[in-house]
Amino acid sequence: MRYDLVIFDNDGVLVDSEPISNRLLAAYLTELGHPTSYEDSIRDYMGSAMHRIHDLVLERTGRPLPEAFDDVFHARVFAAFERELKAVPGVVDVLEKLVGGGVPYCVASSGSHDRIRVGHRTTGLDRFFEDGRVFSSEDVGRGKPAPDLFLHAAERMGVAPARCLVVEDSPLGVQAAVAAGMDVYGFTAMTPAARLAGATQLFSDMGELADLMV
Image (cartoon, rainbow, N blue to C red; front, side, top):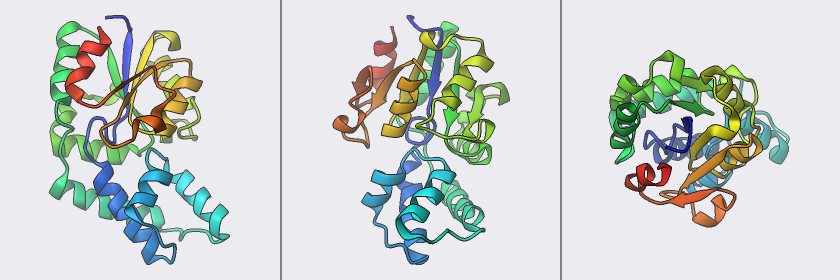
């Protein structure tokens, strides 16, 4: 194993949440008078912390989102997760290989701690992620593409950035990992490879990841 720490993004990498959350985000923004398609949401907001959604809408329209936006959106997302959410196919095998090989790993997500935990409980991934392995943009104040979250995770796990591998599926996440001085493998299951062009490696099936990390 050439890395001392593997840092996973959560949404779209560990749990198959991006289709659910972007469908709901597009619908909610449209409901509020900001017409947004599912494709628009994937392009503009996938991998974003909530503050970036607020910032982009305000920048584009001059109108702030309602104060209750985050609470309403999260309530809708969590309810849908409990009905629909699955782990990304193949990711349990990857995590079991890391555990079996004694390789340190963690999750660093733009989502809130509550969102991460709901998703992990629903999919059964919580058995792999005790509290010390879970990091959120809530912990640092700035989400991706800023490198803060990945640097925070590496520091807390006691590993130098240059010895870390990030697994990401969004352009913002790839930018953040590169800015943090980390290698990053881009998962192209939902994102066109061209949009993850800054990644160290690209892969389209989670079954490929364990071999790439060797």
